[in-house]
Image 1 (cartoon, rainbow, N blue to C red):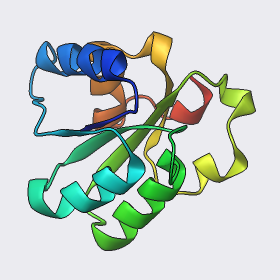
Image 2: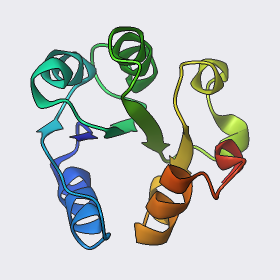
Image 3: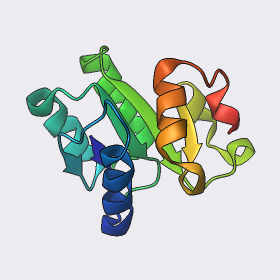
Image 4: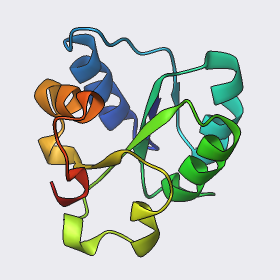
Length: 122
C-alpha cells in the first residue's frame, strides 16, 4: 500500500513496486487518516508511508496502524536527510526510513528481507 499526499510520487512508487519481483500494490491513500481506515479492508503486508501530510502525519498513522495491525510493516519515505528525521520516526514502529530519491526495487527488497540493517541511516 502506498500513502502519500502527492499523486506524482504515488504513481512513481507504484511503478517501482510494479517492477519489483514479489510485490504488488493493493491500494493507496493520500492521507494518514485514509491509510488508517483502509488497512483493515486491504490487509497490506507492507505500507510505503510519507512522513509529512496534512492531518495526521505518516509517523502518527504508522503508530496507529502498528497498534491495530502489528503484522503490517511500514517503511517511512520522505525528503529528510536521515540525521534530520523527526525523533519519533525511529520509535513509531516502522521498519525503517528511505529518502524518496533513493527509493527503488533494490532498496525495497533489501529492507523487506532484512538485508539493510540500519535503514534509518540511508
